[in-house]
Structure formats: structure tokens, C-alpha cells
Image 1: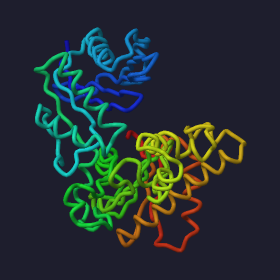
Image 2: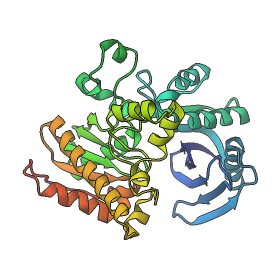
Image 3: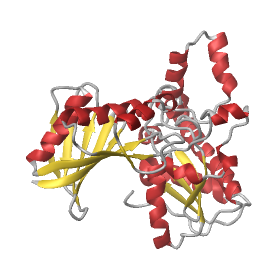
Image 4: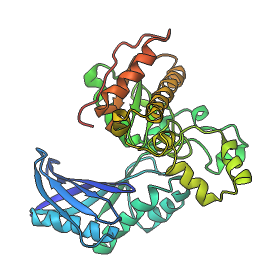
Length: 355
């Protein structure tokens, strides 16, 4: 059996994982648990060349059973889990580096559930599932918020009373692990000291201003619902809209949260047609085109805002599912931007391979 470190990225509907050899760090296998914690949960395993080794539906749809199936499947292929590192969305203002997970750190992470209600509970459930299966198994966490800890104080504040900021109501920024990965590649592109805007475009979308390899400002703020329009999230929204829903439509907190996280974005603007960019681009319906247009419009506005935070711009990088694979969306953003009388973009780059 080969001892391996398992990197886990648990989302609301999928769990992606990769196995790396403890001795040398070579990638051994990659896998996906689809419909994670839902009906018809399935597990697929691929080798380093993306050749499928196994795919099967799991009989038990619970998250704990899926984690157990992952460990057992890896064992069937000669891989023993020696340690696990988790992508955790929210580390608050406390966690800025890789952290060993124990009872104290997990309790602290539970306090951030209201700030990331879709992602934080799932991560904690997966961590608990590993702990239940093997309490001695070392587990570590890397945080999406950590990359943005370098932002200047002015970039982290809202225009609200100071005591709220001191109590943690502030801009955090997310998708930090993706941005950190991109940053490590900038030197090879001659952009180590450049002013770069990275657009992470997928079901969840954000943009980040990176200068000399450090986060300067980002589109996401207090939560992962802020900033750019996304698959089912609206991004920037006048807070009075929420008050209108509650005061005049009688919506409670749960209903508002569903509207913000599940019913908005590409799905909402397209009239419920789809949250999938591929389906919207293939559709001839006006509402589908309007959803795509608004998605691109918001990206272009955000690029301009982030460029202002850096007092200039040298390159734009598109990454994640839409950024890497939807050339039409990227081209629409680029066409809108290129016509503006702003500092020249010396090296437009898309996609960023290997992220």
C-alpha cells in the first residue's frame, strides 16, 4: 500500500479529491463524488492521465458513507490514507495559514457557518466523517479567506459603525486557494511584479486584484454571495431589496437566503431556464441571452473597479469552469473591456491551464 495525502474539496453537491504520495508528493489518483449527500450519489476514480479506473453509484447517500467509500475505494487501488487536507471556505480573521484540525479549531470554524452557510457546514461534516472513521488520522485545513489577509485595511471595511468591523463584519474575500495557485504561476509568465486582475468564473464567481503576488482587493466581501453575478447568486445587491422582500413580501430569513443562494444569478435572470452557462449560450431565448449579457457586464465593471484599486492594470487572467472553457463568455468580456480608454492591457491571458 502506498501512503498518501488526500486533498479534499467538499462542495454543496460534489466532493473532489486527489491522492498524493507522502514520499515525494507525486499525484497518484483523482476522484469525484457526485450528488454528494443527495440521492443517487456516485463515485468515480481516474488515474493521472484522466483514464477512468472506476465509476459506481453508492447505495448509501449519506455524506459519512461517501467518505468511507472514498477511503475504501482508494484502498482497493493500493492507496492508504495517511493524512487529509481540506479546502475550507471561511477562516474568518483567525486562520491565515494551514491549520491542524482539532476540537478547538473545529469549534472555531463552526462559528463561521453564518458567513458561509452553503460551504462551511459541509466541510465540517466531512472533517467529522474522517474523524469518526479514524480519530488518529491527521487532518489539516487550508482557507479560501487566507490569501486575502494581505489586503490593506481600507479594502476590508464596510461603511458601517466601527464596532461591527471589530466584531467581524468586514470584507474577507474568497476563492483564495485558486488565486494562490494562479499567483504561483505568474513568475513563469513574466508577471511576478505585475498588476493583475484574476477572474475566477464558475458556478461561484469572483475577481481579485493581485499586485506583486499579493491580494489588494476582491469582489467578494463578508460572504460568498457578494460581488459578481454567479450561477444562482446575485452578487452585488442593494440591501434595501432584502428589506423590501421582508417588509412587503413577508419573506422570512430562510426564504431570503434561498432567494439569494438558490434562485438568483444566471438561473434567476434566465427565468429559471438554467444556471449552466453552456445551456444558456446554446439557447435562443431572450432571457438566456440577457443572463449571459448581465454576467459579462458585471465582470467588466468589476475589472475596472479592481484596476482602480491598483492604479493600473497589466494583465487579466480568466480561470475556473466558465473562465477556462467558455471562450464565448470570455470573448464578450474582453470585447467590452478593450473598447475603453483605460491603461493598456499588455498581456491578456486565458485560460490559465492546470488550475
